[in-house]
Image 1 (tube, protein in one colour):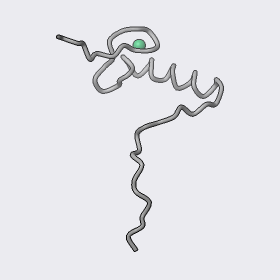
Image 2 (cartoon, helix red, strand yellow; image 1 turned 90 degrees about the vertical axis):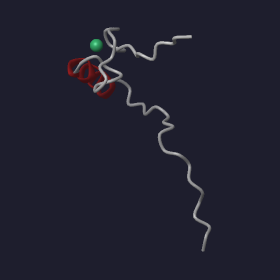
Image 3 (cartoon, helix red, strand yellow; image 1 turned 135 degrees about the vertical axis):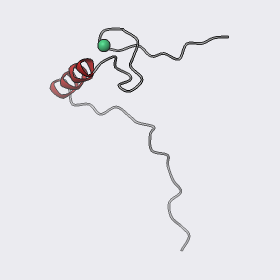
Image 4 (cartoon, protein in one colour; image 1 turned 180 degrees about the horizontal axis):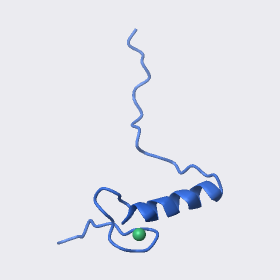
Length: 58
Ligand SMILES: [Zn+2]
């Protein structure tokens, strides 16, 4: 099972750059950013921040 973990640039479909992923280049990142800023201002739900226990250790 060799599942490729390479992500493709959502802008042009090229393999993403390790440093710029999910984009392949700074330019594509800018394109996406502009698209995002000029488009509907929708903030996608993020799972980045883990939900910590509400501090109840008082
Ligand atoms: Zn690209």
